[in-house]
Image 1 (cartoon, rainbow, N blue to C red):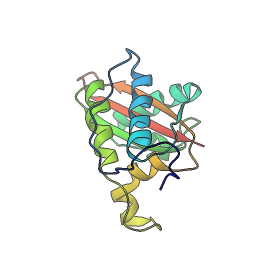
Image 2 (image 1 turned 30 degrees about the vertical axis):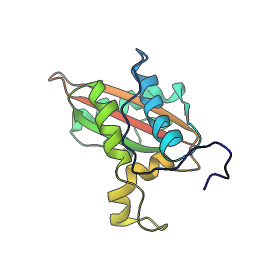
Image 3 (image 1 turned 120 degrees about the vertical axis):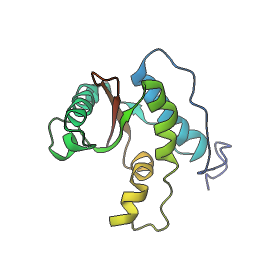
Image 4 (image 1 turned 60 degrees about the horizontal axis):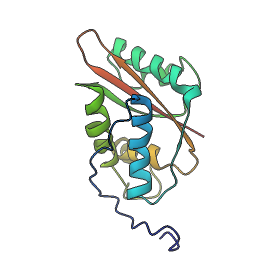
Length: 157
């Protein structure tokens, strides 16, 4: 399915160990998303949207405060927001990168091309990650006073 140009063999069901940390959690987040896109789906990598990271951080903090994933995106508290994946209440930044992002990837692909309602609820994180109209991603992180990590990934066109 890739025209034989890249040598990538598509494996949507792939399970990958997270790449080594760069020491920059925002870059690690983008690298992890791109790992799935380039190594599993044979899709192009996304660009890190540093201009959207303050908004993504704000959304992660807002959502943690409300204890409700996507509340900041729904309430349109800042821009740019785009479509959003979120890891609510994980034990650490490392767990967000290694576990949560694999769980999101594992939701895909949907059984039909028309993906709305329950199909979107079951496969939405994967759909957001692989949306061909998305070219950039902004990651945001917030750690609560009890140590729970909330992480938002805003996929931007």
